[in-house]
Image 1 (tube, rainbow, N blue to C red):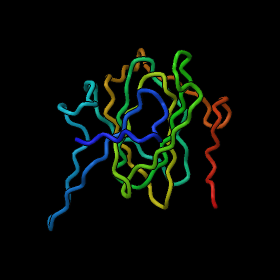
Image 2: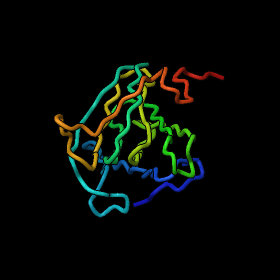
Image 3: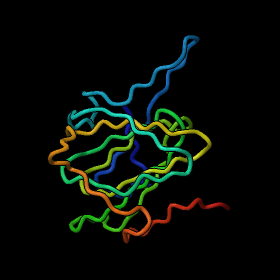
Image 4: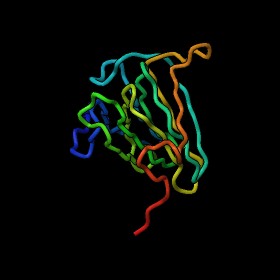
Amino acid sequence: MWVLTSPRILIDGVRVKRLRVIPDERGRIMEMLRSDDDLFLGFGQAYVTTVYPGVVKAWHYHRVQTDNFVVVSGMAKVVLYDDREASATRGQVNEFFLGDRNPILVQVPPLVCHGYKGIGADEVMLVNFPTEVYRPEQPDEYRLDPHRSGIPYDWSRRDG
């Protein structure tokens, strides 16, 4: 397993794993998360969520849960914001481009705000392997408005 430790990862606790796609004449395979990976913290459930081109799903965070995002179809811009009071990286924003053209796993620690936007012409399919099971009677999910939350990020496309 190779874990990216680039200086572009500014938010404390965020980890990225470059994924390997293995093609052959039948198709391809890509392992996403293994229980023997250094970044494996536990398994709660696995789910798929989608977003249409240009649509933003943001902001939300968890108090306990760690997320592990992999885009398996399309391309997405995943954005993280550190608003943790005791964090050395408080106020930092990270952007990651995940998907067909860049197969990586992004691990999002608790209390880091996150969201994503479909980029390109196709619906995005994102797989998440959170460390906790979703409990509708007591959800560990807190939502903020994607455009008026006070988070210093503009979801608009930047050309040039």
